[in-house]
Amino acid sequence: MSQNVRVRFAPSPTGGLHLGGVRTVLYNYLFAKHHNGKFIVRIEDTDQTRFVEGAEAYIFKTLEWCGLQPDESPLHSGPFEPYRQSERKPSYKKYAEELVSKGLAYYAFDTAEELEQKRKEIPNFQYGHATRGSLKNSLTLSKEETDQLVNSKTPYVIRIKIEPHQEIKFNDLIRGEVCFDTTQVDDKVLLKADEMPTYHLAVVVDDYLMQISHAFRGEEWLPSAPVHIFLWQYLFGLDKMPQWAHLPLILKPDGHGKLSKRDGDRLGFPVFAMDWLDPKTNETTQGFKEKGFLPQAFINMLAMLGWNSGIEQEIFSLEELVDKFSLERVHKAGAKFDFEKAKWYNHEWIKKLDASTLLLDVKNQLSSANINIEDDEKLTTIITLVKDRCTLLTDFLDQTKYFFKTPENIDLTAIQPKWDEKKTTFFRQIIAQWHNNFSSTAVELEQEFKALATTQEIKVGELMMPLRIMLVGGKFGPGVFDIATILGKDETIARIENVLTLLSK
Ligand code: GLU
Image (tube, rainbow, N blue to C red; front, side, top):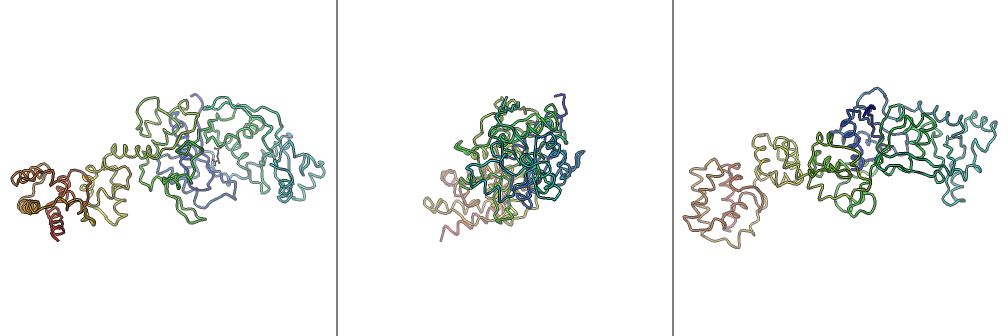
């Protein structure tokens, strides 16, 4: 690619970041890094009515967690500062005025009440070619009347003037040629009464000023494309326009419609990247992070929702994704979200990562249950033993806590039906034996255990499960002698004794 690649993610800070939003970030990032380009985050906060406290900070925290750091953003200085549109307010008005002077936009003075009245009178009212001739704007008023209203500071907006029956075409990097008939396109507001631009004007002006080469965004923005193309054509020239790619939607698991937060609530899985505390309702929506996902798995799963590598491999690190990513392999059709598959990715990543990489996450899981571990070496050994059994990071709590705390619940019902005196004798004796000499390896402990079982003529298979329940509390966990080695002599003996006492009651 000869051109300097500069891409942008341009979120409006209106709430938590949906996984579709993170995927847009990811594809932007992968494309930029693949082409040694720059990834820019621009905050599109011109709609003050939709502004939500904390949403911008949340976006940056999410990007940090995902490891998708921007090169330029409100938090990462760059040559086109500021990167928050509300701070760029003075730069937009002149472009709207330029369009007015070219006859491609106009002043509209209609009040909110007047427009409301029109909406009541005309079904599906749109401010556009069919209605603007009967509304209060600089197309229907004389020049003197218009000047007088502007000079007397009557509030007005600037609207784009879209002519009907025109064909607007552009080449989408995913969809190929896309054509629109302008007849259905309304005269969008470009500049509001407070001189704040709307999204449509601001996105085009900033993509131009920030020298954006490629603009990737969700398919839901496709209907806005004709307005943007129009603005590009008349303000800056189509040769300067970024190349567009409208990314496929992420669909509900049944494939019917766009995946929404409500689907997640209904079906019991997260849709946001991280926990989002809505400041208005004070409600927290669980995120993938808090559900127990690794960022590596989350990113990997998202990359594959709408793109394929062309090879069988499914597990990719971020570096590998950067290397392999190409827009040609992004699908046109929407991608169905499958939570079981998302968990599969996480499980694969837990298996793949070293125990030492998982250490901090596991410590956090344990400390949430007030188990604070300082012995990193011991915890690392434990993680190595149990990690293949964990699908989510939250699974580590149950899979590791019994190493540090005597199990609270012991599944005696699994032992009792087949329990007899012979087994009591066996366990009493193994305690005595281990009391005198507790071998340091799992292999030796197992040999001693089996030898005693043979001497006492008990099937070793009938003793293993009771031993596991004595040490762990239930029928789970890695090799039982590995567990015993880590628990050590005193704790192993104490746990066996405890259960023998319970069984004798
Ligand atoms: N501000 C828009 C959003 O909230 C950006 C859309 C675009 O990338 O053009 O997603």
